Image (cartoon, rainbow, N blue to C red; front, side, top):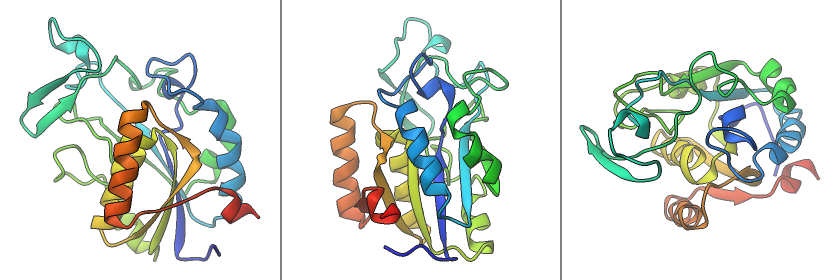
Length: 210
């Protein structure tokens, strides 16, 4: 698979809180960082997303008395999973993992998401209301990008929904599966099912690095 000037690498939420020792750690999260660094060397256009929450974020279980993380509630825009507090603005947990520094330094932009306390944001394109854009789509179109390659954390949430919205926004979407990690097997399986339905291509990094 040849990488060209109309391709972009999207690195989804490579943050401390999603890696080992973080508030919402994804198993093996830190381990994908060196591979993402190698991939980023092949791309002219690299964009990074960053969860950027306030303490009163609606998706934090701590803001709902009696609620526990990893349960769902009904909010104005539909069902919302509740999470442990994570990626608080300005915190170490919100910082990028140190191993991803070369990628962040190369990135043309960092798209911050989830900063509206009333709406969570998984996708790099839209908040969870599926209406409020982050600006990523417009930026990619201005850059002449037609295909995006997705890596990062977590495959079954923020990578998945970014890929889904990429397709809806008219981009080809390719998920680099071994440069991402999932939170749980069940939600990972659901993500793979959606990729097949929407035509999201799944590859391994060797396809690009070989």
